[in-house]
View 1 (cartoon, helix red, strand yellow):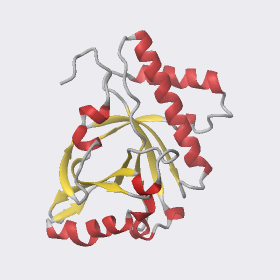
View 2 (cartoon, one colour):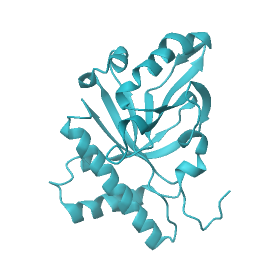
View 3 (tube, helix red, strand yellow):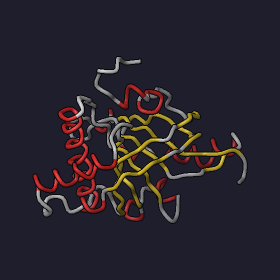
Length: 214
């Protein structure tokens, strides 16, 4: 365990969830976590609402980080961007029909960050950047997520190459292991796509599951 005065880093403290090495599906147990969250829908490559959601999340997350370090003496590394993805027809994720996708973008919160700290950070970000620069800020909230037993793997490569791994999950892995899906598809983006070549992008793919047919 890191010393109490060290900088908290969710990638280190929950290494099994943020730094897996398996590139085929395996089961993990995911504890309850709190996140900053913004919902939306549509193609993340072309939707203005997606870019606005990400901007709001990072603006508030970094405001919380600096306030925590200054006011509480507790610093942390802002976690990677994460996303829950769902659709009326699950096959659109295999076919990459991105216009039909719905999403909830997330950034993890350290356990000591209380609701009032988030509210203060929202106001501080708004005062600094203005409402026009942060149109998704009113949609930002705190979300608690407890996925429990989940199938997970590390995908290395372009986001659009995730289809075969998802097809293996849906068509092979679940049935072979007597599992059913119980929650939304979850992705953790470990690489910055602005600075990383597509073939080297690392993304955690996760699917909450349960035994039996429900």
